[in-house]
Amino acid sequence: MARRKITLRDPSRFKDPHNLTWAKYIEIQAKERARYEAELAKLPPEAFDFSGVRPGYLERAIEQFANNYWPEEAATHYIATAAAHAPFEELKKCCLFQLADEQRHMEMDRMVFECAGIPERDWRPAWEQPGTTYRFFQHILQLDDPFEILVKANFVGEGAAGPGSFKVLAEGAEARGDLLSAVNHRARIRDETRHIKYAQALVKALLEDDPNNLEVIQQWQDDVIPLFADVAKGGARREWWDNFIGGYYRIALPLGLRPTPVSF
Ligand SMILES: [Fe+2]
Ligand SMILES: [Fe+2]
Image 1 (cartoon, helix red, strand yellow):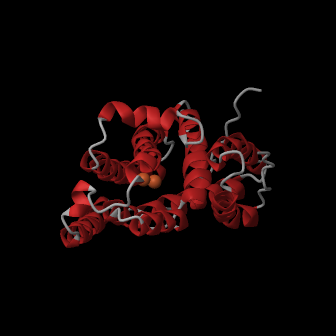
Image 2 (cartoon, rainbow, N blue to C red):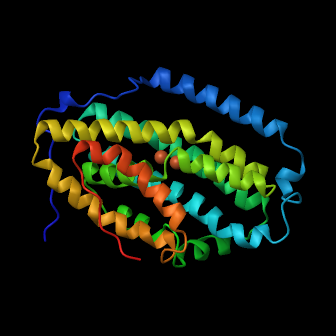
């Protein structure tokens, strides 16, 4: 089946829910940056050389580090594509602010790999193995339609992975003595929440514009949810999965979308 496209005939239906201007964006990001640096300054030296983590932690954590770093790296590409193809200014602006956010997140995650002393040649193989977010992001990276990218990556992907899961990741890292990862996860929650919110506003605008868009959005959701099921490792991480997908359905089902059947 040919890839289905949708349009927003009346672009005035979409408004950035945060009403950001460049000046406001720079201001909130400067505050975020100052907050982040203050958190880093409070960390003990062992947070930066990973000498305080539980034995065996790093061997297991490399997959999580890859699942943090590479999706942020992928986001700097796909959101730039969405910005380049955005059909109207208000949407392009949201994508460009997100591009700057994702660059910041990627650099935070690069620092974790570097501080942990994991050689760069091992970063990519840790992501390409089964059971990671690799397949989902490879799919997103080959798209060029801005609505399809934003629905799949921001609305479905970040909607599911969003704020709750970063909190869980932060607590998990902290419990194992990885204080640097914990600070990083907390430092992106506000940005990720903003990315989900504007994608939600976009989906609402598309549905108001033409109720027939629901079937295309449903198809886009059905395309990507099975790719994420990989991360549930054949159902072994069932609790994680229920939490993850539950977060997305809380925003999607009220809009008329139906759950995607997934088999493990
Ligand atoms: Fe991010
Ligand atoms: Fe994001």
